[in-house]
Each structure stands twice: as structure tokens, then as C-alpha cells.
Amino acid sequence: MTVDDLIMAMRKAFGLFDDAAEESWGPVFRRQLRQHEGKALNAAWLATMAAFKPSGRQVFPIPIDFETHLPKSPRKFDPKMGRKLDFDGHKARALELVDRWAKRERPKIEESHGPIVAQRCLDEVRRIAEGRAWHVPKDGEEPQWIELADEHVALCESAVVSSERNFLYGAHSLHAHDPHDWLEQTAYCRSMIRQGFSPSREAERHRAETAKADMSRAIAPLNVSHKPKSKTSVSASDEGAKINVDEPPPPTEEPATEEALDW
Image (cartoon, rainbow, N blue to C red; front, side, top):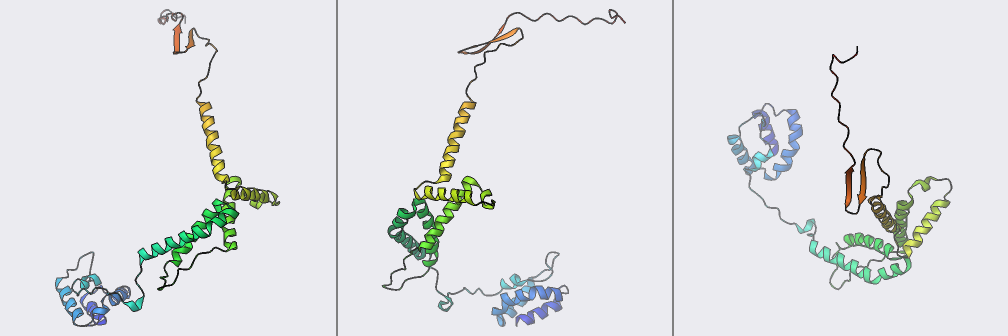
């Protein structure tokens, strides 16, 4: 029995398996069941039809109903289809490439561009190592070293400078007619970064210290020296505020009766 024979049999057995259903389910049946064509598919057809009960949710069998009656064929690795991925070896090779770069190339970049740019270059080296580590070197073959060209290092530095400048000054200077402000801002950030200082971190530290100082001033106790106009006076002492009542308030008069009112 072929898959086409099975589809024709289903059209005869189930009225709702029409042209639209065959157009939707036909490719699925062919993909899932073509490898079992023959006696195995015929036996699965008979077993499925004997046990299937149409319902409101499912009006005809679907491929998974036939697969339960088909032999399980474990997938085997075909060497012709490619090599098996070695995740452990890939991780070890990537770490080795990054470690070699850090020992050989990073000190040069730190000396010329500063540690912040070197850290940004390290992120780029890790990205390159992730791709290059999939290559398994042959016996006696040294893994290819990672070396960033001067243009690549300059690009990493420009990315750091641009990010720092935008954090400090915003993007409005990019749209100004006179680029003088933008050039000054960029030059300042570049000089700070090459000296090992992050302008954004310095700004955040300054803002945190300012906010802390403002908060301490805001919660400082106030020394109030004025006296209220009411007869109840408040006197401040070291132990806390005390309320001193000089004299009780005058008694409240009883309201006049209706007869006492002068109409």
C-alpha cells in the first residue's frame, strides 16, 4: 500500500476528507508515512480503521493515528551528512583562542587605546572565537590566532566613544548645523577613555553623590522659632515637642430656643 492508495481509501471512507482536506493533509501524510509504504503501511491502515471512532473533534484519522501502528525506526547518524557537533571541544577551543589573544594582543591595545577599548575588543574577539572554534585542527596543526586589525580596533574605540558621548550629551548635537559641539564632545570622551576613565560612570557617580547629599539635606530637622497665634503654644526642647495649654477654651453657650429668637 502506498500513501496515495491510503489517501484514496480515506476519500472513500470519510465524506469530509474532500479536496480541501486532501490539499491540506496530503503533504503531511506523504512526509510522515512514505518511508513505511508497503506491507507495514497496509497493516497500519487496517489497525487504524479497526480502532478509529469519528467524533466531533476528529472526523478522520491523521498521520499520528497510523504511526502508532508502524514500527519505530531509530534515526542513525550518517557520516556522509556531516560531522557530529563537538560542543565540549568547541568550548575549549574558543576559550583557548580568547586566552591567547588576551595574553598576546590585549596589552598592546591597552597601552595605545586604554583598558576600556581593550575590553570592547575582547567582546569582539569572543564573537570571532565562537565561529572559528568550530574548526577542528588536524594533527599537528595549530589553531589560527585571532588578531584584530588596526581598523577593527579603531571601530571598537569609535563604538565606545559614541556610546559615552551620547550618554553624556544626548543626540541633539548630531542634528545641529554647526558640528563644532559634537567634535568637542567626541574629543573629550576619546581623551577620557584613552586615559582609562569612563565619562558615563563618572557622571553616574557624581549624580549618586549629589542625590545622596540632597536627600540628607531634605531630611535634616528644621528649627522653627515662631509661635502660633492661638492660645495653645508649642515649645521645642531637646527631648521633643511639648504642647502647653495656657488656659482652657471658653465654654460653649447653649443654643437659643425658638421662643427666645426675635423674629
